[in-house]
Length: 310
Image (cartoon, rainbow, N blue to C red):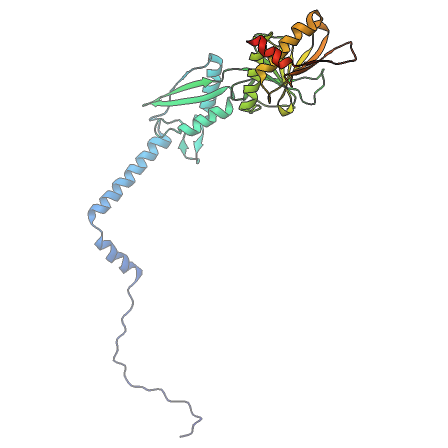
């Protein structure tokens, strides 16, 4: 036999029988035979329940909010809040779920919606009353005074003024009533502008201005306004156009006592001629009259004012 010829294939009969592999359909049939009939019943019931829930929640008027009761605010504000809620009720979340149902009512989303839209609202309490009512309790901000942004503004330019609360949040436009005594006025020389809902004052700012105003009123008279400058510096304005310079970094009560003593003993009847009195150092006071070139100085006022307070 020549080595170059191809090897001959064997024609011997192969007795092994190869069975075809089971098809996917037969596999599913075997699995289906193992599932009890009760499972099919439960799956069918769950499907029917899901369809029913979708119909009630998405398409029908069952559990739809038809009555909205709003308390804690004036009729005009209540009208505006109700209008905003009606806008939300007409929306659908994820293009499917209605927002006007007492079932699964979106409390947090609705609360955030009202809080972000109405700056004068400090808190919202929502309570669903089945089947068709929603109770809305409004807590409004309490004004501490009027805040005005005056940084970089000329005397003749318009000033942004708002009512502010104890948290330092401005929420409603207010008049620039520089000579009003019914509500306290604050001029902020650190800020140029603001919008309703902005936090413009820190808790320390609110505390310092309130403490300064009360201390001056106890020791002397209530100032017409307080100006807030940088580094804790405060200016209190009085009739006649003069100001007192104070510092929130020192004892405000002692500064107010020094102010009252200098006005009484050094200024006297010339109060209308004053330009300013600087009591930031407490025990050393500087004062200046509008027509004078020199600045007056009083030493050891702190000890004298403390004796007067006692």
